[in-house]
Image (cartoon, rainbow over all chains, first blue to last red; front, side, top):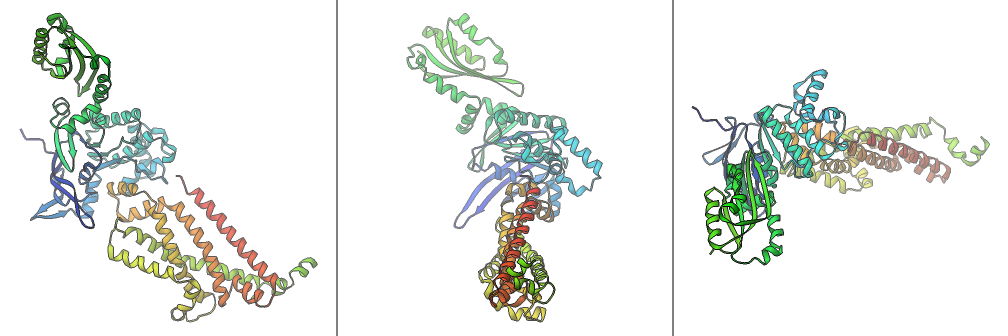
Length: 360
Length: 230
């Protein structure tokens, strides 16, 4: 069996900006393989270098060092410590296979929706009816079929992003780069755009690279995640791996924000039940992924160990059809019962973290 | 008619089609304005686009070319027009073999207006969102497409607005050129009306220039409005 070839391969990418007196390394020795059909989320705070990194994929940002390989074609290659780039004519051909959408949509204000959508294929010299068909087909795909003759200023943010997606798909690319595409949209619209991206991923087999500073966006649709900080990828893996076993503090912060745990914890901690917690009661965080969610955990605590659980906060995420949950609860009971209960919970692959109180 | 004859005696006397007639003057002003607008406008467009495309963050970033364009524009922009008229006379003579009349005026008028227009074009183009240019690049657009289909189209309304402003200041320049003998309404207002103390002639010449400028402003505003969809 042959291994699946990555559609995007970044090898040892450096991007250095030469400023007046100093040089700033925006991306440091990053390597990344993205497979066909992936929705790859790249998460990081602004300034982490994620936009710069992703712009090397279509050479909007030329890497100072490293290889950019798209579908086997080298767009940038380091030989003998010198960086070489593909000729500009071939680069334009390659760019047509890589669609891109942006935070601020970047539609041409003076052109209609139809003209915007056709812009990337204006070199094709289509007949009037072919153009009309193409526009209809693309707008149908993004759910905006009746707005072909509107100008961008007449559209809402979500509609503009749909037009931008239709435009990015006009040249039938295999890759779509989304640069903070939902960051300027409200939560409801964000969700509808993400669902649209997911649909395109499934129906067209589109490979999507999703940059964002919101883990929520990634959580909805990505199958893989890389977390960037200070120009480097500090952690990467499948969505489930990252969410259930994050290794780095930054990753944990992102996840806690995305699952509302951060918020929940803050509110719960200010409750009197926690402030006046009496020994031997303990305040715990239970985290679980997959099948263990189905076990009637709380009920069995009482039935088997005589331990009562006062659940103060709960959250369940369905990540790629796998439930991932977090509970914040006060467990009360006798010393020995509590210890036995905790051990039993741990055996069921549930992570237990004691946030306040001690086991005897 | 007698009222007009009494109030504007010299205006009527000047006639329509003589060398200093009203018809001739109007024609000369229109001729100087539009021909130098075309020559100076083309130069201004070329320099204005150059200043944006070759700038440090432009799509054809090139420091030396930008430096040269920038300096040429700055130097010509710094020379007061009335001095430019005298200063480039030898060059005018070389180019059109005369230093008087409307054709001679075209040279300083074009050179006088182009740096002003170039800066205005530069400002109009700079206001096109960088993101739109980046998007076009990401779709594999050629430099030619980015110049004409993106920069030009996206800033068209602004270009029309700055062209209107430039055209109006150009009418002002033709009046100044007229004062030193190139003909036109400015010539009549100064060398006839003012010099011979025939105030009615100055009045009518000024009125005509004002009407001309109002028409330009009106047409410019209208075109800018219909070409904008922001």
